[in-house]
Image (cartoon, rainbow, N blue to C red; front, side, top):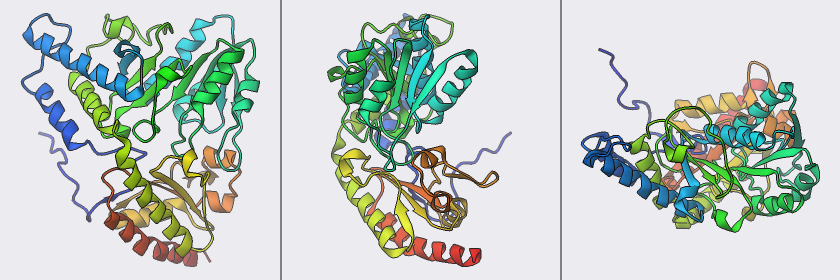
Amino acid sequence: MVNWPRAYSGPTMIYLDNNATTRIAPEVLEAMMPFMAEAYGNPSSAHALGRMAREAIERSRASVASFLGAAVPAEIVFTSGGTEGDNWAITAGLEMFPGRDHIVITNVEHEAVRNLCAQLEPKGIRVTRAEVDADGLIDPERIAAAVTPRTAVVSIMHANNETGVIFPVKEIAALVKARSDAHFHVDGVNAAGKVPIDLKSTAIDTYAISGHKFHAPKGIGAVYIRSGARLSPWFAGGGQEGGRRPGTEAVHQIVGLGAAADLAGDLSAMGPVRSLRDRLESGILKQIPNSRLNGTSDPAKRLPNTSNISFENTNGEAILARLDDLGICVSTGSACASAGHTASPVLQAMNIPYSYAMGSIRFSLSRYTVQEDVVTLLDTLPRIVKELRGLAE
C-alpha cells in the first residue's frame, strides 16, 4: 500500500505564493464534501442522485455567472482550468474565420497563450505581439492598430501573473470591435477574485478563469462564452455542458468553484490585502538597497495582492531557497532559469536590466495572509539578501 504524504511537516508555514495557487477556503471544502461521499450521482442520470448532482451544477453555474457579470448562466461552461480555457477559446476562435491567419496578443502573456501561439506559427498563423512599456502597461491603441482584415483572434490577459499589472480589457475590446469582428478573448485567471468583473457590459467574447487562483480546488475552471459566440468543442465526446465541453462533469469540483465564486465575489477582503501588500512592499524597498519594483506603482492599474521586486546582483532562486528553508513560500514568478541564466520573458519585455531581473521575487498575498506573515518576512529578507550579495562578491 502506498503511504501518501498527509501533511506538511516543516517549519511554520508563511504562504506568499497565491498567484501560483491558493488554499481551498473552509466554506468551499464544506460545500464539496457531500458530493465526494453520499451525493455521488452522475449528473446525466435521470434518478434522484443524478438530479441532485445536476441541480448542484446549475446552482454553481449561476454563482459563477454572477461572479463574472455574465448576462445569463448559460454563458458559463466548466473546464479543467485556465490553460484549457485559453487554448480552447483561441483555437476555436481561429476556426470561426477559416480564411484568416492572424492573432494579436501582448508580449507578456501567460505560457498558456504564449506557447500556443508559438506552436501555431509553424502552421501558417501569423502572431503579432504588442509590446508593453517599462511599467508593464499596454497602450490600447497599440492593440487596435495591430488588427487587420485577416485577424481572427485578439487575446489579452486581464492581469499579469508576474507583476500584477492590469490591462484595460474593456477599453481594448471596444476599440477592437469598432474595427473588426475578430474574436476577443481574455485570460482572466489572475484577475478573478481580485478586481471587479462585469462581462455583460463589455464586448469581450470569451473569458477564462481557474478556480485554484481564488480558493477553489485545482482542476476546475470555466469559460464565459458570450451568447451568440459559437465555439466548437475542444474535443469529442458526449453532450455535456450543452454539447460544448464533453465528459462527465466533476460535480464536487464544480460545486467548489461555485462556492469559491460566492466567496470571492465579495471584494471587501481585498482592501486589507492591499494594505498588507503595500506594507510588505514599502518595507522591502526601504530596508534593502538596490531593490526595485517591477511594474507600475499606480494602485489602480495593478492587482491588490501582488508585488514583484528585484534585488540587484542576487539570484532569485537562491533567495527563494533560503526563504523556503525558513518555511516562507514565495516565487521567482518564472523570473529566472538558473541553468540557462535567462530572465523571465515578462521582465525582458519590460526591459528590466539583467542584473535586476535575475534577482526577482514575486510576493502574492491572499485573504488569509496576516500581519505577522509580513512582519516575519521583513525581519528575515534583508539579512538573506545581504548574505547572498556577500557570497557573490
